[in-house]
Image: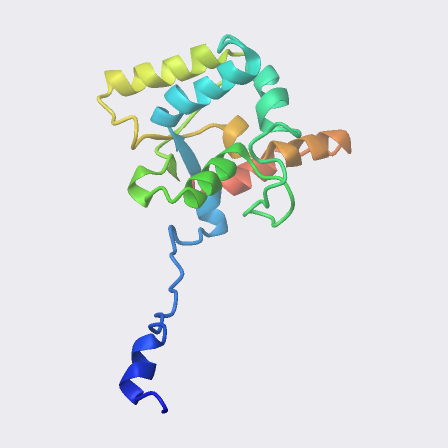
Amino acid sequence: VAPTQEAVTATQEPALAPVQPTVLRPILTEEELLVQGISVTYLEDAFQAEVEQKLGTIDHHYYDVNKAMLFGPNSKGHRRTCPRDGKEHCSYIDAVRLEEEEAGVPDHQQSTGPATLMLSWTWGATVRAVVGAIVRYCEIHSLDKSKTFIWQCALCNNQFRVEEKKASKEVVPFSEFEKKFKGPIL
């Protein structure tokens, strides 16, 4: 005896709806990538914790941080595709953004965003001094640290590209930086 149509239908697996891709954040333009900053909350918490884990203390200057965290095989951006030039290895800030997107962090909780402040500083300063000054600035001016995004060259420029240029003895004149930053940042 052949099964009835109802019996065949009841034993078939239900049809699955097509999967829709989830877009966490829109793809940023080259100009938008150029002016991305990192939140003060991230600097105060995650960044300092990472420095302490990798270097033992936040009293190291940024020359040490660069070698341990911003460039080379132990950096966040190592082996990650750079969204700015499509080459292997990206900046610290791009790696943070990619990690958060992969983890499904919603836009409003992301640690990167359009820079609201540009930091003038020196590589010889310690992480404690730089981050402490930024935090204090936010406190004095009643700024929300999670919504205050800092553009800091060490974290926002791709240190892999910087080191490649240094190794090839290529000198980048100030006018190149001025062209890039004149409109969006300055």
